[in-house]
Length: 150
Image 1 (cartoon, helix red, strand yellow):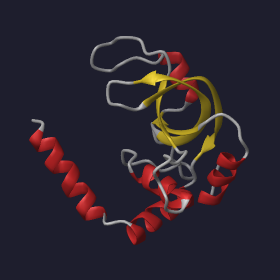
Image 2 (cartoon, helix red, strand yellow):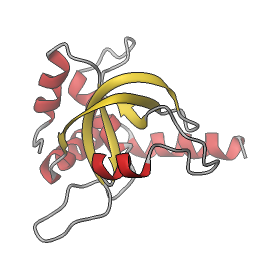
Image 3 (spheres, helix red, strand yellow):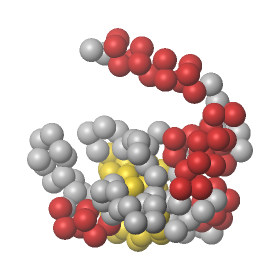
């Protein structure tokens, strides 16, 4: 279980393969089901995930990039609480990028599980994102793009 954004930053510093976040029922369930496109049923060459390594153009602090990526996950994205086991949760993985899924997310193969994201880490990301970014403006722009493409 990961508890702080700084832990994710340390993972990015260690020089291993990329670090990604995924929202699902966990790696075992993903293996059992096999990665597939939900709409077409076509098999995918890897698990859809979101990269946590900042893009080269990102000049703001890395923790802010990570927080922004974590807040983009579907809700509820929180880790299980004592006595409650939600069907899906946020977890980190490492692996090799093998393509892109139909929604534009990265497909990752040769997956190594890093750990789940604790409630306090998600809350830290939410606070940092709300303090640093214009969340309302970002959502409004995303909705306008969606409507323009409809």
